[in-house]
Length: 176
Image (cartoon, rainbow, N blue to C red; front, side, top):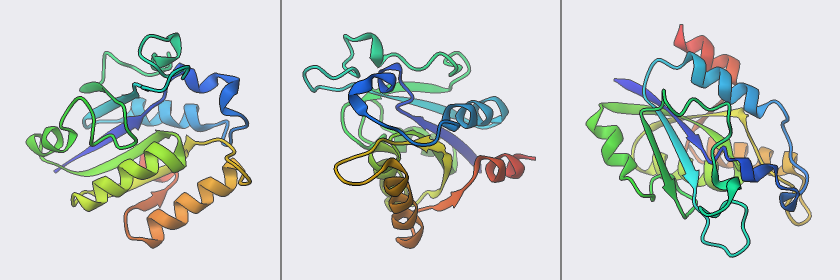
């Protein structure tokens, strides 16, 4: 059985100051390390916002994937306008099952939004899910810091049985 790497919403628009303070400045380097070492299918998902004024709208430069991502090497690249990567322009569940994928590793932006939602859906669909938490980041929201939100996501996903939480180093070690 194959394991797919699903990279969620790693887009230029998340550098816009509108988002506020973020956590985990090493996330991009960890995502890049995973993509470079990956031997199975790589899926790049892009958020195509329908919100007026969003830097992630398809007609804005911020919609583009960050330059370090190897789009040419990716097996699948597609957009979505909701939080779950499983509800986009492509039937991701069908695409993964056609390739015999039973395990997925999720990384990307935002930890507590699209990464967490996609993880929950993947778990509900029966995939064995790992989230490389240090290959994600998020932003302060209301009265919670980005680090607090990241920790809450970790507890929700692990405690709820949706996913195994791992570091990039642990995921990379499992590739050997």
